[in-house]
Length: 428
Image (cartoon, rainbow, N blue to C red; front, side, top):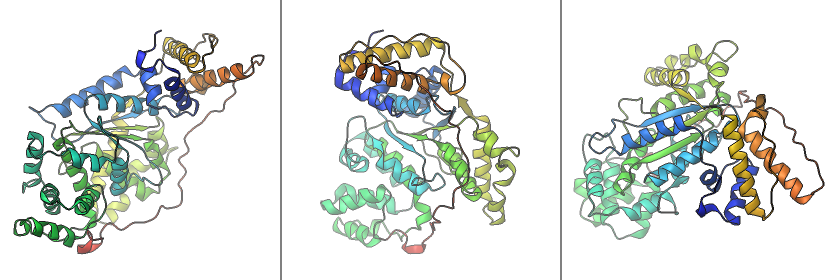
């Protein structure tokens, strides 16, 4: 098995091994090892093709969920899909759901997506790079500007106002403030109006400060269109470890299910064409969280609190999100023995190049049972054994492991937030 010439060098091979050794596949590892999930990859490329279709653009966001046990390659798959999307001209953001990025909080998830954004041809901060790539003379920008100034786009007038100031003002500090606002930060209304006054556009953009709760979904739509206005096909956001939702309190889980429906384009009044979402979740999530026994029973209990507070629309979205988890997840395909053996042999070649040492061949074995049959276990055990043999040639390493299973115990309530801060919500 031959390794591609662009990765056939010791530094690249060592970077790949370091990621695999730590169980966190990096770009070098993904480029070398590729991906065995052909069905999921094919569906992903179909989503990208739909997002790129200029003649028949999608009505809203596109997306899919992928389910698998711990160690079956979900994170590796996302890294691979990210690489593929970048090659096709999409901006990509890959983020892990965590306590710092709670899925029920669109504002924080959006900011994380911006912070983790990558461009096919840029390495800087996403919104700064996009701002630099907006070309007033391009057709893509003209379409974006026309859309932003349309009265039917559903946006608060603060967005076209900031775009006008960004286009025409020469104040670098003001331009930076506007890009920060597009990234999710606050900006004073007076700052924008001063900019409009400088360029003689103040009478054309009358507006009051929006409420904070209105901004996150509008920022997501605006940012997606901005990405296309800068000449890219769209925005691919890859959400890893959605199963963390299972450790939230029930009200937070209910809001998370509603957010899932939003992200996957199932909310009719929040269309976001050009956005492509792929999320990963553990395969036992539905049984552990949605089912009544032995799960937490969210299917019948999660939305009750929303109804009690009169939030029927959010409850309906939550119901949609739970249906997606139950019926529309794609299970990862288990690797065959041939896939595993081919991967281990490729790893052996990588290891030999990385350390200029002839790594011994591994005995070919059948898949095994439980975690020992998973690709992560086989990859890490092979690397660890080669490490020991290289450093201690007379050793006889044997790998022991323990099974990992997701735990869905509720943690103390995360910090409560108030999104509605009144008419001054856009101000710093």
